[in-house]
Image (cartoon, rainbow, N blue to C red):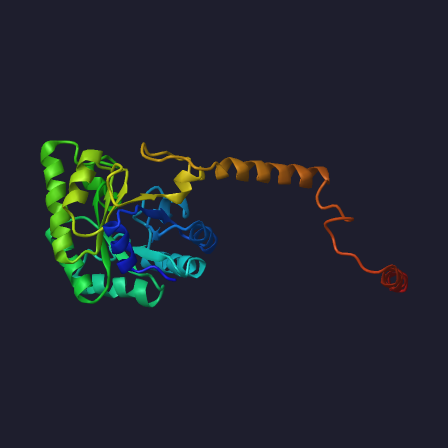
Length: 283
């Protein structure tokens, strides 16, 4: 049965931890659903781990819709959130609602996510929620605000900034967010926000006290090695396995070991082979 926001709220009430991973394609989403992952984020992190950009800024709405469609096909029963890319919601409430609607109508997402807690972002959250669309906030380390934050740096590491994050979480919840993602904050800050919240709090690098945990799947399976955040735990080394497989394939092709015509190729009957040779002689 397909998971809904009611299921996630029940898990929080029952103190069941929520499992949350990113995905950007059909095959990854299919295996995540088979594994029992509760939620999938089609993140704008796709720009870095799939499209090869050095930031999330170049990712477009069309990129996100195409990826979200593929993820929905791979995980029809998982709660899926579409991450609103840079400049898809910043301009106006109308722009934000229209693009959020695309995730729901065109891609079959269950909710959307947007970053920050400026007065304008609070209005965007409220407008999207008022349109009947589930919206997740995203606080702490914000890739789309990296220039203002001085890079990809943990947030809430002073008493003042920690209190600011508590206030931001309250404001985003009051604006109508159905959940909040905390990224790159000290565990004590994640704990205090979670204990005060009336909605699910998901964490990525926010300690163990949040209602659930998110990881970028390419990080946790060893595929993205450009850099590894402090909070990532590697659960597989798919990157190394892919490299070994690709190297073995190249060696076999170059040495003539692949393909083997007796094993890897199609055959025809001796009778048809003889007819074919006769036809060749008469050309």
